[in-house]
Length: 300
Image (tube, rainbow, N blue to C red):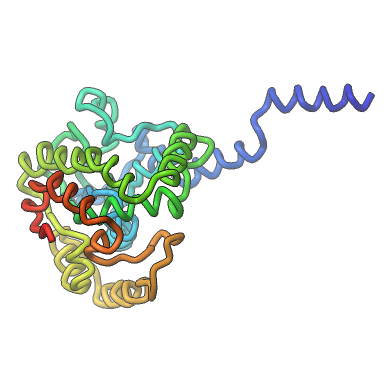
């Protein structure tokens, strides 16, 4: 009798998804209610401020800059949109991986007024009327990107939710990273990072004049000036109290020492010089020669 009961319970469990997955799906819908409404063409915001699109390269303080832009946008009646974050935790595609033709079915998500889209780790191809948006593009030295990415993938980055289709792929990437040395990893992934910069150059910088280009390094060098310049370009009304609060939080967020298991591991310029072998640095200098010149990074 007990065996029959266990067999029946096992059979029933196979018919219904685990309760944990059901709850996660419910939480996903709540967390990304705005994104889902936009995807369905049901979200409306009558704010007339030009929409902002925040482009970046992964490991250039993407989530931190996103949080700053979100806070400032909200104070101006704009709606923050995290389409890429939603994709990370669901079956929805990463839009920066699509061709212009594939992007056509998602054009309705992008509205020219009232929204702040953040953050995309690669260029979107084919967004209509991009010249009417406020475009923020944040870069970082690709050599530091690769070093930071190695520690992030290996140790600190949170895996995508199991309810989406990205979880297993991420776990595979993590396994490969942990089985590699840091020098092996950065060399193996240098082509991919170069391709991200090349795509930005070809599809964004060479085509549009309304791009505000700034950097991770500029943010670290003088946060107050970096923040004021960013707010000025976006034409956001941000009071002095908020600006001072953001400045204090920036100081408080800086780690006293390196912790390789934390998302904010170190946050310094030129970390690659301390982590990579001389021959690896030489390889990266050649690989990213044009990028280093374009964004005023030295080859030292």
